[in-house]
Length: 466
Image (cartoon, rainbow, N blue to C red; front, top):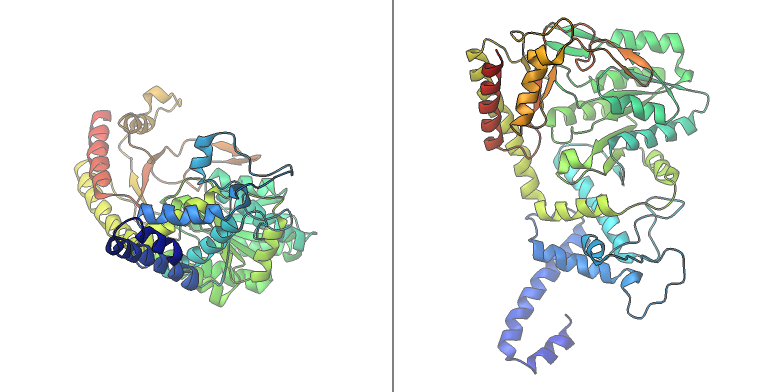
């Protein structure tokens, strides 16, 4: 409310009350000024009323909310349901234009501002997470499709190449993003070192020499993985890619929350070739599924990805991220990261007590500081693969029935065909891991109460199942 309107308010109610109210309004305006000028996460998170106040201002800047506007185009942000309007804070034009995902939208100044500001806030969050990058693109698709966008862009720059070298990690998305880009995956088999499953760099170099660097679009490495798999050695793979002049894409799905992974990627950026890094918005920033970050130090390449995106895009994932960043603030985000590190230690301590009771062990994978593996060597597997007689899969079913979500049981007895490629012992990231196991993840937002409940239910289910 401007000064003239406040003066008019003073003619209706006592002036001293208006002055007090004016101070409150001015405080909000100062917060907005800092946001627009500094373009960083606020030091302290905004309350919900302040965020909704700002969103309403931005919504009024979009043409669909203009008074007496006349829309005679085929797309005028006409929204039938009032509930849908409210869910989207009265913004419906989306982001970008047909030629560029990051172009400002003429009919939506408010939505365009949100998109640009969210990019700045995301870069600030990455900086707080120790990532040394200077360019970023937020895309309204999840990690797999974001990786496909990266691969399609690299393919356009190297049209004669058709292969993607992919160190094995048993997650379907990794293969499907290669297939979606109409490229051919070359699986780089892993090796076992004690409890750890890791990439065999000698085989990677061997495959590069066999296929020839000119025929390879890129190496697709991975940092986010289930134990006993550990993150790829990004620094060493980056050096190999630099040596052979091959593009390098890093699938960093939920690695933003982990300083060890940040250090590994920074090493790759400094000493070798890391062209593009992709991370999930929901797994790192606690928003609904549907968005991803593509980032790195090659501004031109990231710009090409934004120009490859066909048509306009949904603003919903960006809006979710914008609201969440404002709500978290710097202090909230850093506290969540601190809590995750402490919870990881606490989680392992709780599991250590239980595994000693049941004569199992925590798999020793110190380079994976998100996922934890627990052996299930004492549970029986039916040799005829009858699920009802399989104590390991039964354990998973019992946990699920107790509302325990996210744990994964691996029998090491299941072969699977994914994208036409057959994998032995699918789920274990290798052909011959020495024990069945269960994995859990200490991800951002996990609470000690959830850890305590899991520990209790896991011990009970294990004992009940033996």
